[in-house]
Amino acid sequence: MATQAKRRRVSVSRQGTVAGYGMVARESVQPGELLFAVPRAALLSQHTCSIGGLLERERGALQSQSGWVPLLLALLHELQAPASPWSPYFALWPELGRLEHPMFWPEEERRRLLQGTGVPEAVEKDLANIRSEYYSIVLPFMEAHPDLFSPRVRSLELYRQLVALVMAYRIFIGTKNKTLRGISSVPSLNYIHGEALPKRDLIFLGLASEGPGPSFSLPPQNCLRMVATQLIPKGHEIFNTYGQMANWQLIHMYGFAEPYPDNTDDTADIQMVTVREAALQGTKVEAERLLLYERWDFLCKLEMVGEEGAFVIGREEVLTEEELTTTLKVLCMPAEEFREFKDQDGWGDNKREEDSLTITNIPKLKASWRQLLRDSVLLTLQTYATDLKSEQDLLSNEVYTRLSWREQQALQVRYGQKMILHQLLELTS
Image 1 (cartoon, helix red, strand yellow):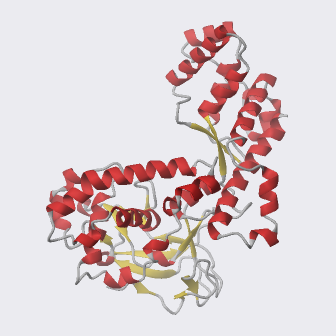
Image 2 (cartoon, rainbow, N blue to C red):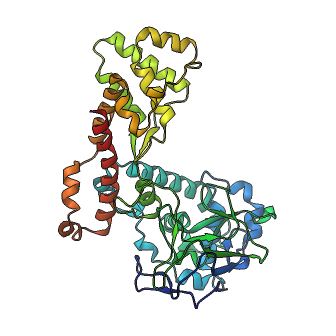
Image 3 (cartoon, one colour):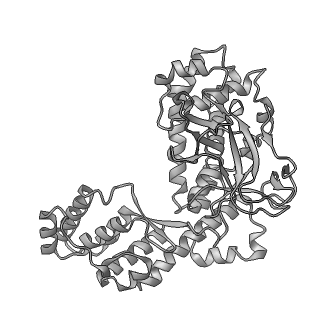
């Protein structure tokens, strides 16, 4: 069940690739040129696997927060099925025990290398959700069908490993036939590594928008076709973009980060409660603290802040401009003005151009706004285990090459975030 490929143009190689293997252009590839096609029958999904009928009948019992349980059960079954047509595909997978996603790092290493980045907290939520999903849905289903799932695949660790692979290599399929909608694992996609760069070397024909990831429609030829979107020179490795993602998202989902300053979509987060903490630092008496909490509760009512939310700062813009602008305004406005603002439910207040929270306009903000933002940045920087100077020392060529892969990737995440935060410090000084 091999995929159809234009082998004279591309090939899988261990030479000249970033991860030990990859797809390389044997000849120059022109924009719009077909690289390979994957027949529908080769897509591994809950619909095409040998227990597709059972998974469809039990669809209601297999619903979960992730929505991936049917595909993961299909993978678990086919992995140990003696005559699975996907056995050659599984043989080409990377060693599951060597996956580099942070969820497989020792907890101490994850916290030490990624403290302050938001990744440890995101991973802990993932692990809790995976564990809950496995024990409440997946394991009971496998135990109810012992003839379909051997004891060797009834493993939480294996389930975590498959979740990581699905995160990296799944696509969302949308077709006119609703019975084929869902998530699939695609042979040949495993050979193509990703970047967070805005350019895109490849695209599946029939691009649609369904679900949180790439989504593709089946062309009339009953297959998915991968085509180039730009010139790929001979000998170059072929990359597909993972989209506009910050480095912390890339390492969280895929186990790698772009080296600074390549990822122009990198961001740094300021936790919303950190801004509240910074504002509380400026209160002197209980009445002021009570008023500040009243302001915060009002911002929660306006859905501008939350206990677990974050303000997202990019290199060129504040991605949560409305939320951060409103928060600075409400927390800094005089008490009488706040009363009037609250009576109007926050509406009807015209936004002034000088209050715009673009990066270039930050130095022009009111002094009280700039001070609160600056104090929030300083508190955020305290959450990291090291300072910017320490990171810059590690990035020197001699030192950097001696770091492990995980240390290098985590360093790129931390450094990119700190550069954005230090830019904010300069703008608010």
